[in-house]
Length: 593
Image (cartoon, rainbow, N blue to C red; front, side, top):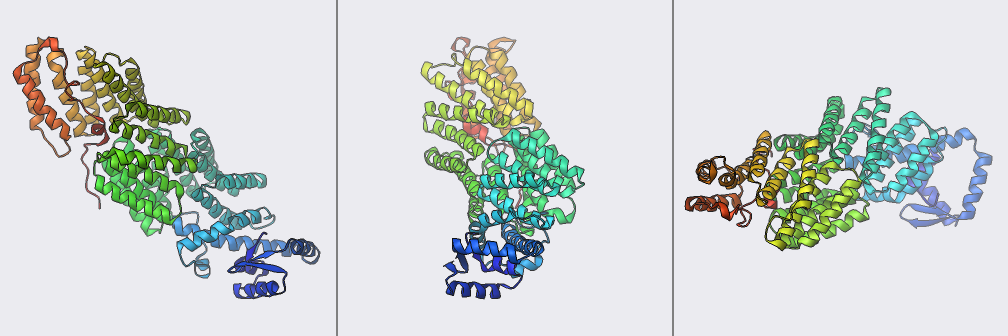
């Protein structure tokens, strides 16, 4: 060992820390060991070699193994108490080391994490000499060390631990570490590898009739499927995990699964259910003292409030998440919170600072080797650049995001990037030519996005893509096709009760009726006036402010009479939904405190 402290010395000597500290101080006074700082000491190389040879001569194998087991148990108790301060009472550590909490309590979370930072390399070294040590003792330490590696993003050391357990080949150790390597692969954006690994781990836990382990692995698999855009299967796996986690001792695990399921349901458009799930998750995380779980729940709540257009509440939740990530030293979580906080500026109509903040977040994601975080930040950066008027750079950033999503096989991210890339490309070409005629490439991107959204069951995404396609068809003298797309979009919006989306579908239909009516422009105009009047009368709280202005403008146009030779005028007059219209969902929700 490069150095050791009183706690490790006490474990090796089977004595208390006070006595171990006294002996270390005495050795330091004689010059046999060096005092590093506080209660840490370093052995001279010559002394270490001499001590190692005398150990072999003077101590039997049984005594050496017993000392090593005491050391690993001591490390396990300390490391577990640190991780428990971060993650709370989960099934991997609930009710473990109760006596250790008092004996090895840290003065603060910061001091606990600092201790584990200092000691982690020595713990890994100790595990390499765990032959003959009780398997459960090794497993307890491995679990805490693996969780630390994931928290710190130290995936290299996690790989070392995985190789170590592969060599040992013991089932319980192997499953525990494999589960965490699956999570690590997901964090690196290796989603196919993560899915394969976690599917295997679920099977191994089921073969061993280990419900808690199977549920944890199912939760991780569900999150991976979510990241791949396979939302229907992700929801199914997470609900399967919840069913296994219904016993009260697994309440800590259940909190993590609840906030993961809420993220899936948010992306599927089930905002009300997502709010309920997050409310329950927050209660469980607090009851089980999980600061880290609270952080991710506040993070998900922030994203959810952005979907509802409630910027102030979203920012408050995201800042709470950022604070908790900072306290638990989760650099990856901090970068994600930075991305979403920048997005609050974008939703609030202030794109310039959003661009700067997103670039800062992008650098953090790259430092963390978080490919998925980088891809989503590029995606939002493209939208922010569009809002500042830099469409050329916006398209470049969206295309970079599209490439990354495609590489990691994230169908949902790919569909979103295709949607916005197609929309911005269409507007870019139209700004150059003055019309929507040169929109072939944009139409293909939007068509592909619609197919992706349909395949993964995201009605929200498919509906808005239908409207963007309708705008292209209307601008290319295909009013009949555009009208059909508006009706299809309205049906999709209605399927999850999005009043805001239905409004825009009905309005665009009114702009098209004079040109697409079988009875001609006169009949179409009369029908359009009636439908527009009905739309205006059916107001609601989530109506887009821009739509109200457009309704008034179209009403004036219809009253003055529409000429067929003028063609469809809505795009030229700006009476089409912008990017912000899609950003906010007009779904009814129950307030959650």
